[in-house]
Length: 67
View 1 (cartoon, rainbow, N blue to C red):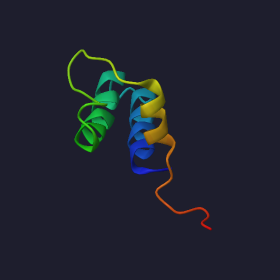
View 2 (view 1 turned 60 degrees about the vertical axis):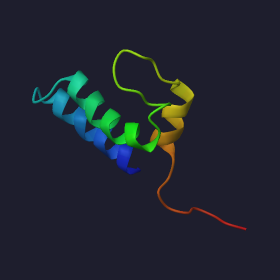
View 3 (view 1 turned 180 degrees about the vertical axis):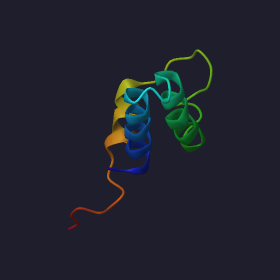
């Protein structure tokens, strides 16, 4: 898992244990994604592209293969 997914997974675990809220878990990931691309991942009530967010969450930090 990459950094974003680790933070999200940790947040879900804390929610499951009653130690946090889904909103806080979301906001921690949002604070990581926003500086990467403020136009795609804005703060506030503006929406974001689900496909862009999914791409960032599932992107590997490691090179899996190269040619």
